[in-house]
Length: 254
Image (cartoon, rainbow, N blue to C red; front, side):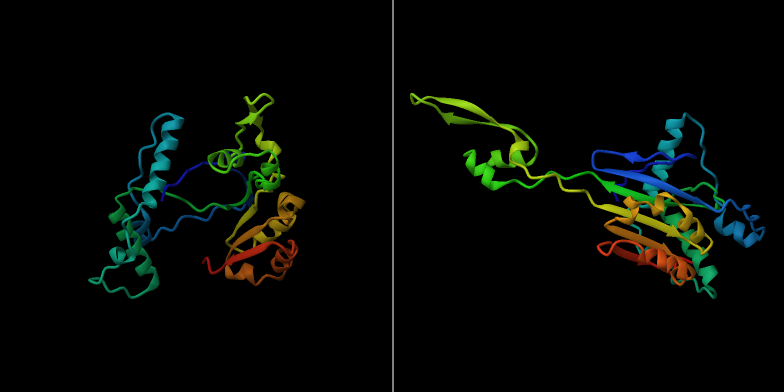
């Protein structure tokens, strides 16, 4: 995958580029973090040598980006991860073995992590698209069919030769804005990560998630634990979106 990695800080600001604005919406339970397990089996399964984070802020961020790229690099298939020589007896052991094998094949050393009570929702606002080419206006201005039309459609102004009295020609400027229709509203997408039912109340009280801009989203992607998908308050909140909103629900995150 050709990934573009962006890291949000403690007070996340929107990510903006020429195509989209991505606004992170943090949801925090502000609960004490659970104590780390002390089982030796757990430590062996999930403890790896931590990478070195020495360097400037930019160098540290670049190092983290490289880790993400390595995690998604191609070439590691399910067949590669499967190990027919090992018979696992429980799901937890199977999961541990698969993780260990994937890390070994990928050749990456991930930093140690600990549970956090913060999840992120993301509001993606695509920028306006150029309006469609109005062929009636194009024909009225006698723009010849060919590459010049493509340039107008791309937002460029052009020049075309125009005959004048006496048999001569002069160059006339045709502005793209004069032959394009109204800009097309960019699609708005909301992505929600709700790993447990305790986050439902936060969603119901969050001003941004209940704003007019969000409720008019074109697509809403719900990544839900089963207990959240069955929660009546959350179901009612999902139904409060516009009828034109396309809903994508991904369940069984546990």
